[in-house]
Amino acid sequence: MRMTRKLAVMTGGLALTGGLLAGGAGGAGAAEVGPQAASDCPSGWFCVWAGQNYTGRMQKVAGTNKDLTKFSVFQNFRSWYNHGASCDFQWFSEKNHGGSDGIIPRGYKKSDNTGHYMKSNKWVNCR
Image (cartoon, rainbow, N blue to C red; front, top):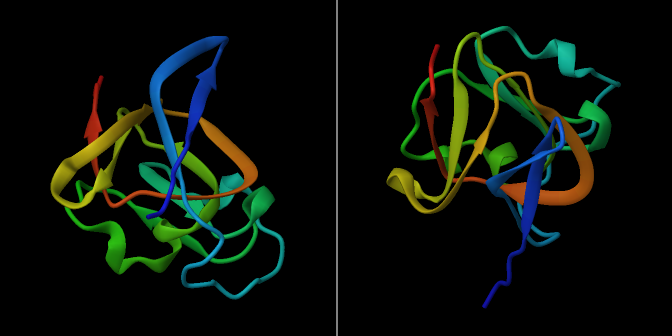
């Protein structure tokens, strides 16, 4: 049985309900590439990177996705950025928008040394 813990998403001193699911150290690895930056994430997209500090393979999604498991980086990432143009990003721990969930506000980005995963997403709170 795999244990998970939640990483609380903080922004502007306000703790949001939910967080990103922390996964085990295993999983499909992404090849490391040269340094990147959060600014490599195009406007209107949610991006994750395999490595800390926005390094390694980057994967991006712009729409609602019922199954993110087809993207290996979403199953073990260490950096993320919601560069959504007008919406917050809602993630889910299971396919088809099931399981635990959390909200990542528009403009929020973070990097740490823990491997995280998500299996589906929606865009919410659009303005």
